[in-house]
Image (tube, rainbow, N blue to C red; front, side, top):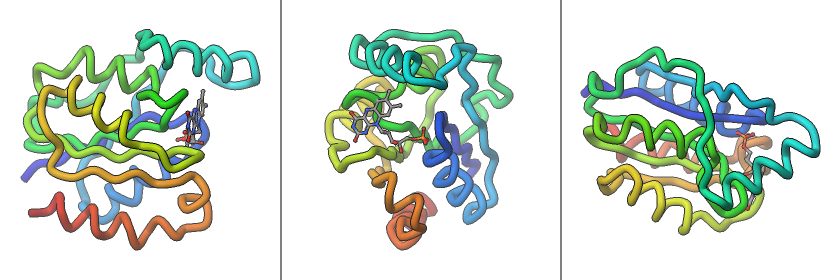
Length: 156
Ligand SMILES: Cc1cc2nc3c(=O)[nH]c(=O)nc-3n(C[C@H](O)[C@H](O)[C@H](O)COP(=O)(O)O)c2cc1C
């Protein structure tokens, strides 16, 4: 099965998880790059606003065609209880090319259900696996036990 891990990360948590998945599966990886500056307080506030309004952004060109993969493992941080704007944009632009999907999210808290529901809806297909991880468990490394279970599910 050909797998692509696709993720966006503003401060590194979702990247850490994406790289852990990639290293275990030895698959391809694609970082989604936003053309908007997301650093600093004003951009933080604006990012929350955009996410809650379900706005789209302009992404840099992607390198891998999702149609070439049996499974996309899509990772996003939770922004204002929503999908991050760059991942919303990626799904919006590429959804027609998705085969199977799995989702992972990172968040400061532990409320992931709304984000997973919308990821499923926008992707047009139910995920074969999904996992929500708290930022503090990513930072202290304790997420690795949970991600091992997730990886087992997507290897089937
Ligand atoms: C604009 C913005 C809004 C956020 N909103 C939420 C939220 O509603 N709930 C939550 O639990 N965490 C929220 N967070 C925290 C991030 O989801 C969390 O720190 C995540 O792990 C960041 O991932 P990253 O380091 O890959 O960017 C928000 C972060 C940002 C930047």
